[in-house]
Amino acid sequence: MYLISYDISENKRRNKIFKELKNYGRHVQFSVFECDIDKKRYRQLYASLLDLMDGCEEGNIRIYQICANCRKTIYTIGNPTEGSDTVDEPDTIVI
Image 1 (cartoon, rainbow, N blue to C red):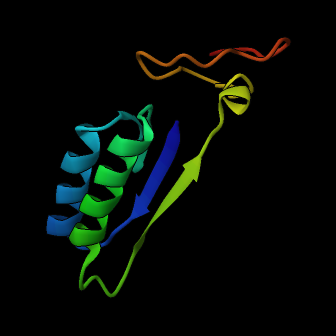
Image 2 (cartoon, one colour; image 1 turned 90 degrees about the vertical axis):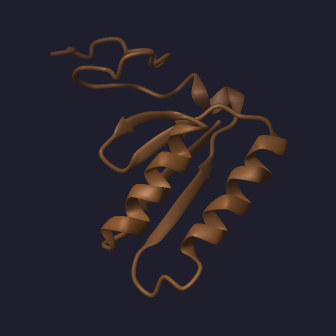
């Protein structure tokens, strides 16, 4: 799984990045996506994001790869996103 966040001030570019990420993953926060994809799809997404960022002087996209074992340690405090497969930590209150 890949956790992808972006901080892009240019509206047109940011909207294109949002639409591209929706093709690959789940929108979990304002500028954050979880993408449960294989290496081939990741390479396609990465290439698309590179193209979309071409010429961008401000902003960035950050990509974190999360291994299968680490996925088991993802916790949500608060209202989890629909379709989320995170597990609440024991003794955590979900509001």
